[in-house]
Image: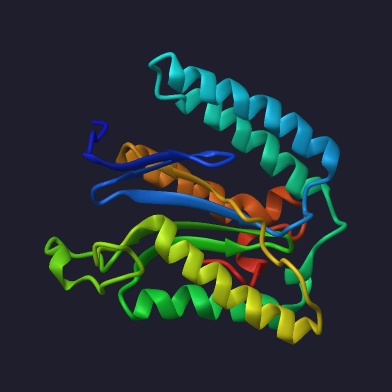
Length: 214
């Protein structure tokens, strides 16, 4: 059975972002420049279709899936920007993901760090029925928000990555893709997708060979 949790936030940047109570979020963050201009233009046209669907009273779920598939296809094909191919940088990103799970910022169900993007499946706060145990996070009302914790994660990891790589400038794309899971069946599909990502990208022949995967 699909869940219909209460919406806490819905807003548009260049992509739609929808936050819900106790949401389980599939998040994709890509490197700045990882998708060439041709791909960005195609994604922009599809994004406009998703926005029109929402304006017309639909949830835009199907349209957002099309946007995601287009984005993922470009990420797998594009090799121009791949800072996380450096194992030291990839290890740092994994440590940042795991440390936020340890301190209660989020619960990590699954993740993968790829050369030019990351996928993470997570829930804000500790995975407990009593959400009051969750660590207060970067939000105006003292509650955890997806936009707040991801902004904090991106700023910190970008600073560390630039230091490790001896570079300056924007590391992550400003915006990210997020989708909340509607059911346990979708949970399982998201985790399968994450585990299959390095294989689909042609980086390894079996998921267990990829070091930066949970």
